[in-house]
Image (cartoon, rainbow, N blue to C red; front, side, top):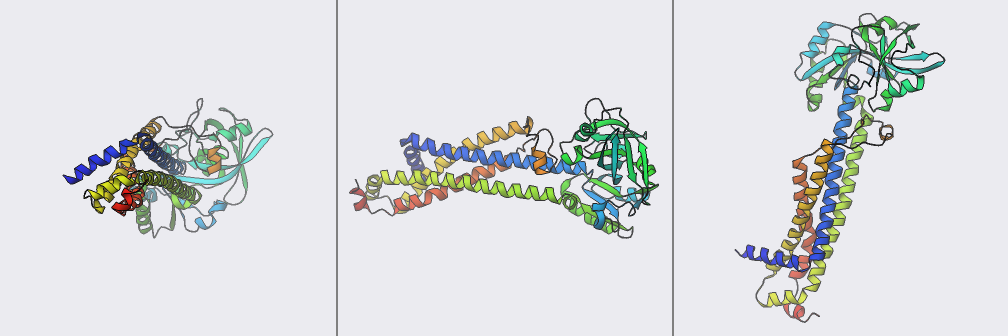
Length: 413
């Protein structure tokens, strides 16, 4: 009952100076809105980059022949796996695995007329990556995805512009065979893709696996197996299980965190940046709250003396001023939660179009639209955190109020 009385007094005291209280809670609310906005946007961007990178790699885990990863930068063709259906089935039957895709990666030269450039070529089984790969869902209007027919190629949008390629063009593809010789073949452009990932759109081509094996002299051979999982959180667990199961098959593996180390570092840096921004916003909000409460203590010094003369104890005064801070913090938290939550909910549905250069700057596959990640859990966490910050900011002014001497306070002018 007494706490309820203190609560009513605290509420009246907050409303005594509406303008100052409104400015303080507005500062807390806008600060919380900013934190929720950055948290939702960066979380959504991180998830999108991770998903796009995994899809671009067509898997959470990549399997190679023993010794391949040590020379992976050279894309060696002489360190290859047998295209064994038994091996593919063994991988596919592993718990958590959604799909497997045998592939060959190699460097080549693509030319049309007088225009030519070095490219990164990816040979796949089209059906194996129709649902798990990013290329199949990135074909631009006027083109189509690969099918079982050989002699066709997909090219990135920027690469097509550089070489003046269009759907129906028949460029020459020159590659180095596994034995070190050169071989060439003409492939018709069946589709042009745009993933939003500069390293893919500007330098990658995709062809049928059988066509690449014929071009490179790799009959019955592949350089990697891309493994897609049902849940990205199972990556490490499934990788350990595959390592155990395939110990006698001369296979080594890497997870997407290892193949995408640079992107993983970018994500880590952005989370650190979010922490710094949040700390600055919280510090500003705490200073605003502390300033408001200190002014209230200064203005109400004689009132504090009167209350103590009438029997109010120091703990009661401390509780009163902390409650005032909590009320302002709660109002600001509700405002920030509503504004921030509404903004993130909107961006999680509609999204926001990033500048065209941002993918190049981050070297990450963001895409054309960034969607924020909405989470009631994060909103609740930040609201509770706002209350803790408000309480901490109010404690020192409340302590000063509770330490007042009644006689001295009553004489204050």
